[in-house]
Image 1 (cartoon, rainbow, N blue to C red):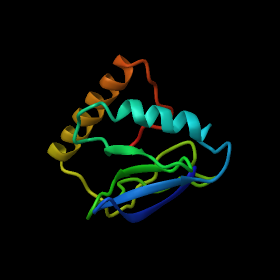
Image 2: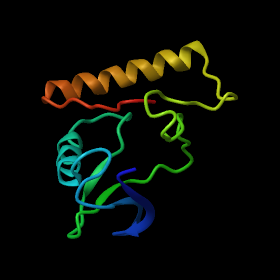
Image 3: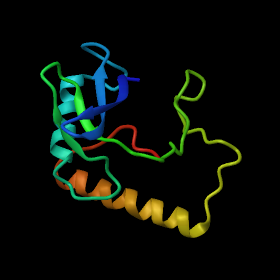
Image 4: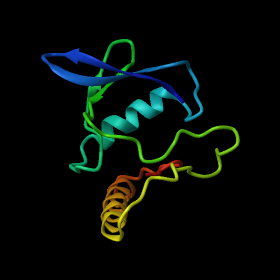
Length: 122
């Protein structure tokens, strides 16, 4: 992971604050990731976490997702080339179609802004 994300009270609301671990992470440069996140925050989509800004230490302030569960599991050295999901996680056909449609809409918005993403997953 490129950093540690914590639940924090900020300006009267609950947010997620991501503090980056170092000058270079598995995702690349934290500065580049922050800059891309600020650009991406201009995309209006319920499928993206809202970015509110960054702190003076470079931490990213984002929307806190209450009650959400990550669909995919974090990568390990054994699984870094593929996504891994819990066996008991099931999606209906309609849920899968909605997820893919929303992800494709976000990818189009990213590509329209000249941004590609190397690890875009569910």
